[in-house]
Length: 389
Ligand SMILES: *Cc1c(COP(=O)(O)O)cnc(C)c1O
Image (cartoon, rainbow, N blue to C red; front, side):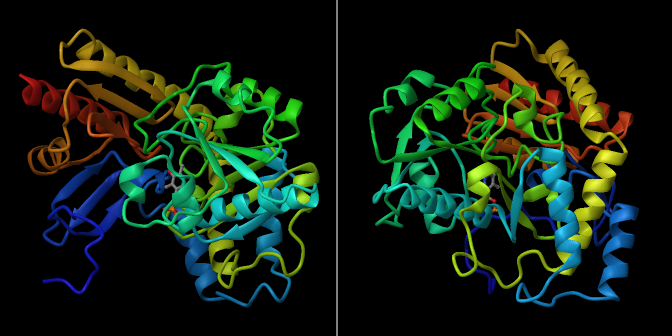
């Protein structure tokens, strides 16, 4: 029926056009997007400034090679380092690749310190991507099933559990901790406010790199440009992708201090990574994000939406928890609710997601208007109430 490998159980709809928080099919019917292509189109669809940047660059230069200097890549790198207080960046094409870079960086950093079998601490319930090393770091047995042997060199501990990591302090093979500041695929899990500062302290004590996977939380999604900023700490390594290009494929691994000097000519590379086309769009995304103060607006908008959901659903017997940070919102039910995705699509013309079987996840674009936000809240609450009635 389809020439495509059967990797996705796709919903029966195809969009041909987008505008802000709306998507349209070929018949011109509109859907409200409360998912942003999974935290990618943070600035909405067909954003004029991004379109202008892309079209202008498309008529100028797409690709040269990392064999040559790429001024747009240097500019984007400098801007990201300035904004995150990191020192250097490696550009690639996806979140998984950004994490592969971080994993390779940590291993090489270990070898440089005489650790022959470097090990990275990773979390239960985590998601880091689908390439083999990123999948091995991922804490989801279902995603790993059938792909063994996995890459070795990872130790897994529960998320949001500092004692579990402290207990590893005597292990001389550990070189780094890889963690999501908020677990996205894992069900919008927000750790205790002491967690990241505690991790920073343990990493400092033990000489480990603190590596934050901000592929989903980065670029304003949580109400800061980068989610680690909520905790007033500085990571040694940070990975970005998803919203960095607002749909143009681009990923990045940023590093600081000694970690920024680990990769040298010959030790890592990419054909497409950081090409002029992607970096031009990335620059436009960053300028729009910072220039229009989107992170602050996201924090306000997220707070109001959380209040609205709590007003309507708090105390509902089937609703276990309503949580969020910025525009990363999870509504956890007491039962599997995957079918809400299809119902939202058909009955409400609304795009939502369900993770971990029981968590309705909303990742709306930042440009969603007030009336669209109200429409989203009403539709989601209606759906949950009728589904659990
Ligand atoms: C989406 C995601 C990834 C993987 O990104 P891809 O671009 O799909 O490879 C990695 N880490 C986190 C936290 C993500 O949300």
